[in-house]
Length: 166
Length: 99
Image (cartoon, rainbow over all chains, first blue to last red; front, side, top):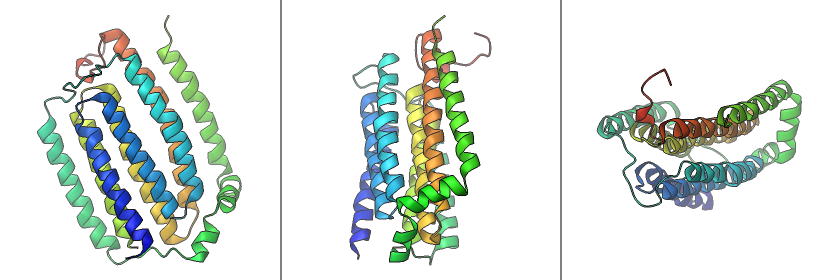
């Protein structure tokens, strides 16, 4: 078992436990903190996969901005800080749907990609550094990049319009 | 490393997110579950980028991160508006189209 495999399984167990915590926690602040565990685990997985720029971006945007935004949202909606019941009464049908979907996905993935291996080679390291990512964004994906900037502006204006007190 | 171990982890996170969206009542918790699903997609994209040695997967993951930031901003604004109108962030109370 390689070092990358050990890192993957350690992170995967932490992320799985964190994900269960997000959907089952009785305390809303704890759920947000469990989500941070999953996000940090995902950032570490990207670095294991040699996607350094995506990993660092995940860290800055998700943990730095989105997690704080969620904690603000929790405070602004005056959520109870103690344990409470935040589930509706369709918990069992939801569990059945999720387990069914998981089973279908596992069967599909084992069938389709059962023998494929990721080789973390020097060639992959050369391709996935920050420089080639920047080249790809500003050469092949420059129009989507500009569209995304317009979308962020629209989302900013939209959030202000929706949340403004008249 | 097997490609499948990343895909199975991602499938697990996605299904947990589906459960959370369906079973949670609080608007902020539903948005947290949506974030889980978006992250599952990102793990898939980066794993396939490493598998095919093609950088486009990583660029797509960056776009998804950006869209997720926009989605959370608008989503939390909507939850705040629901809280202000209904005096509670419970999504089950939003069951009519007129205000």
